[in-house]
Image (cartoon, rainbow, N blue to C red):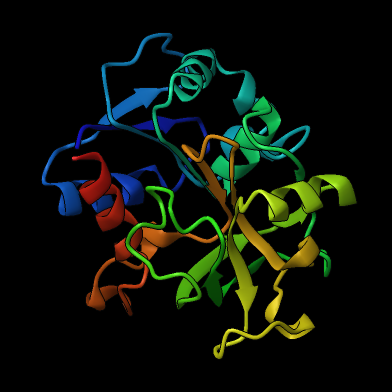
Length: 230
């Protein structure tokens, strides 16, 4: 599996994504600078977490207008899988590849901890191929602007089309206010586009791929991608 990781000024999870992709695919990903306008032929593009451009204006707003993003959008439109993690999710909403917006956390505080996620309807995408529908996994979060918002019609469409990939939940898979770390509407933690080849998620699967890191629930996301795209 050939992959690329976009690097912005302020990215802080690009190396985490690089290590995860290298370890699981056995192939070194291409690190693509945000000012580049071309990208090699790859099977997967990762828009990583961090604080691109210092989160000025809105989180992801400036990064979405970086020169390389025109190529990312073109590749996504052509069917290439694109994975946006945390700030990457924010960037993908700012480009219009995904609907909705990521707002300030409901408690107005930066949240950094592990959360439980339930794998939802979008279980047939390459991103969730390594999980079973309804499976509950533990994945870290680290964000200040992770409160997913969309209007009711958009949320109904996402749910009706099976485009909700992950929701915040309790350890038993149930939903409660305490399980939602940022106030996201309908507990949404990750969604896919209509074609199913673009995923945005706030939690960081690349940070939990090895037992030495405290767990490996994030590994299955990358292993599923490898099996699907190899």
